[in-house]
Amino acid sequence: MSGNLPPLATRPPRAAPIAESLARLIGQQIADGVYRAGDKLPSLRELAQLHRYAKNTVVVAFEMLVAQGLVEPRRGSGFYVLETGRTRKAADEEPGQLSRAMDIVWLMREQLKTQPDAVAVGDGFPPVEWLADMRMDRYHQKVVRTGLGALFRYGSRFGYAPLRESLVRKLGDVGINAAPPQLVLTHGANEAMDLVIRYFVPQDAPVLVDNPGYYPLFGKLKLAGARMLGVPRLPDGPDIAALEALLQREKPRLFFTQSLAHNPTGSDISPAKAYRVLQLAERHNLILVENDPLADFKPTSAVRLAALDQLERTIYIGSFSKSFSAALRVGFIACNAALASDLADLKALVHVSSSEYCERMVDVMLRDGHYERHLVRLRQRLEAATGHALQVLDSLGAEVFARPTSSLYLWSAFPGVDDTLALAAELMPEKIIMAPGRVFSVDPTIRSPWARCNVGAIGSPRFREAMARRGG
View 1 (cartoon, rainbow, N blue to C red):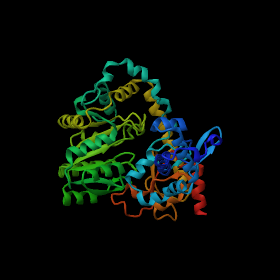
View 2 (view 1 turned 120 degrees about the vertical axis):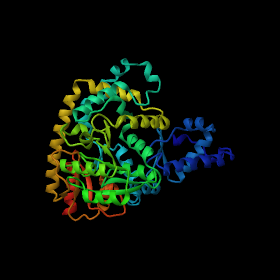
View 3 (view 1 turned 30 degrees about the vertical axis):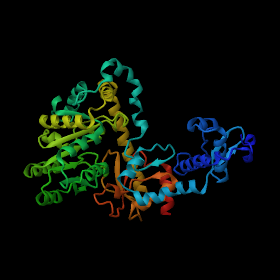
View 4 (view 1 turned 90 degrees about the horizontal axis):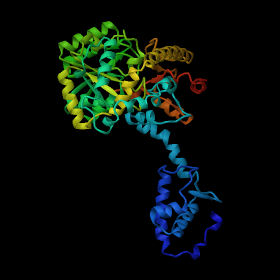
């Protein structure tokens, strides 16, 4: 293509200012990462049509970019972005950006990225292959057949009624007795938490959370202007003495907690702790918001606050993101009927409705006979992966906070590491993504030797080799 470019002297001079503007625009897009090293730019014809410029104007702009060392012409193919000092700087800034912005939003961005060649040691999701036998394409036709007309309208403020009926049976399996009017379907567990916060938490209100705890919850509470008070998490549940002291001093209304497969520590609450938490909640008029995103991975007999309390002082939040697909974004709230009605009204005001298509999909998947077999395989895989991950961590000399027989997460501290933020920065160039302990802390400025490790990823040879080299 470059051999056919007319000489600059033959082009109209008035094309130069317009060409300069176009060159600046494309140069900025290259600097911003819209076009990366090796990317092919749109053709001369495409850019001319897009911007309604003469083709010669676009040619001048491309020659300016070539002169600046940003692109190169390839005969018969087009113009391609070069790896320049500017593009290298953008890539090199990522580790620096880590130390500057290793916060809630950073880790959420990392969780949402798809990097096939990265080892996501700190990942919040189970390996994709664990969920492959519940592929959504197998159920789409059934969803469409169950009510095509309704899929063109907003759904009920409570959510799809048949799914709420299915959830009544599902909750009954774990010992929670609820009726459909006590259930509100949401756009994932995160919308469920958001609704609870909007309903209960005024500006500057004290709110109890697990510490370490679920970092997106911390972000939501910060947006609401709440005063977060961390209840230290122990291997068998919340620190009861610390919880009682906070209740007496601060008189909070809510305590957000995860009883089972706690994120990030992987710990489970003991029966004794569960009863003690409920006693304190009754004495201090405390509402317990129990988030149980990994319910499908745990035995139905596992201790849950909502099962012991029967939704008297508990609000139970569940989700299908971990056991079916995060793309479905279907969660739910179970609570007393009056509160459920209020939360459904709030949901309608803020979001109009949740996705009936996704809710129909989950309902079809729950009613399918394959679901129970899927749960059996999930639990078997998780137990095996947990055992293997513990062996790997032991071989690396790591300290493990809790040693459950099955948990998606293990909270680990590695020899010679007093701040996993630095470890994360060290491993990032090798495309090994950690989840440093600071992110899960109510006070993210405090150095932490701990990291959340995903049992499905911790066995990666690349991670083991990187840690062995570091230790050597």
